[in-house]
Length: 140
Image 1 (cartoon, helix red, strand yellow):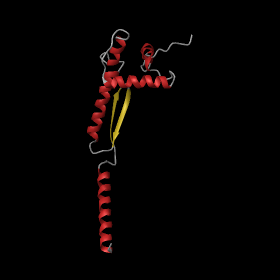
Image 2: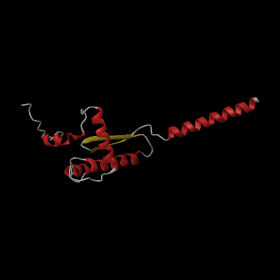
Image 3: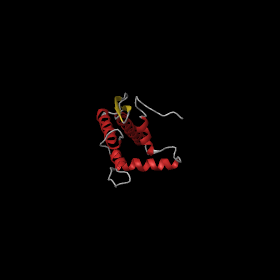
Image 4: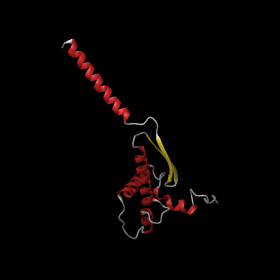
């Protein structure tokens, strides 16, 4: 291979690498776009490094709300409330999201030998855990 051809090939490869790196780094913002919110009983902060950060953040908050609407124990219309109302009486059709969370909850309950327990909800509600008027009974 002649020196000219080799130099031309090296310059082409270097140019290609430069454009690839320029385009990859150009896809991201160097500073995040952040938004705070509240959902699922907690404060949420979402930060995104991207040109379309606003859209991604709005979609993330919409997804959180969708999941909360399906699974909250504090919303009378949630699937979890319906499951608990009908427990032992009839089968219910639930969303894929709710089914997946219940399935994973059972799996981790078994893996931890009950240390993680997805059935703790009735105690949480009875004692108002997570609310201002928490009333955990004494050990007596």
